[in-house]
Length: 361
Ligand code: PMP
Image (cartoon, rainbow, N blue to C red; front, side, top):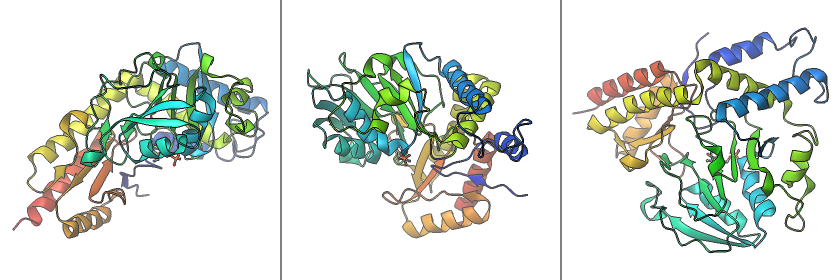
């Protein structure tokens, strides 16, 4: 069996031992005689799976008791609508535009009320995080919205914005569980799991209880009310059972690795190997302001489209796959999520060094 080094931005690499364990349990989950894919979400066996997943996540993120953990569907994109539908009591919110995902969320919110862009880095192709220490946030804004790690552009907030007392909503899809986080700073922290945690199809939303109310915008579908999901412990309808089961396994894997502080050290080590090389290379350059670099998504270019394409093609042949940059920006992007081993990044850099040598006249 030959496994590649997968640098995809998502769905993305998962820990090999998690996949192996799932394979071992595929036909008969722990003596139940069924696969987790086949069992009722109302069964005792499944109840243990989802409860344990939540308990492990609470432990990993140190989630305060006054926050609910919801396992949802619809992708992170559905939260672009769910957030305003549930939170926009004054029909006003502040958005910080740091990339396509933040922009999409902002556009979606405009359907429900006044979504004010209070900062943006679009002037420089989203290659930095704007100064958010003293933003002009409307007094009556219901929340301030950020996309914390910008998957496409490779930037990450190193400090959270000064929300001036407003509720903070953070999309952490591409940095979920990559480092310790203070959940109490957010009203809602949510993300799709298909990058750092599990298979596509599950969204985890961690929501402060006082934000979960019946007082939602008129017309909010039952399924999109946080209250519906919270009152039913994410089992109002059939949840993405198998995906949640895999997430649970990844939580246990992270715990075994030493938790989020250990993940941070592991991720910093990998990112440093790659960024150090980009800083010394004469062929490859990183595209992001150094102080705002993401630990998870590393975009880079050669400055020559044909050479970029050649690199992506030859890298794939050598077993380093999915290095093509997002279709909107071109160039390359290496996503180096939790499950990417250090060795994968070391070998990629070795490959890049050789490529540079062979393609320099
Ligand atoms: N937010 C971020 C930061 C993302 O990277 C993505 C997708 N890659 C999304 C939202 C949208 O996620 P989904 O495809 O699950 O709707």
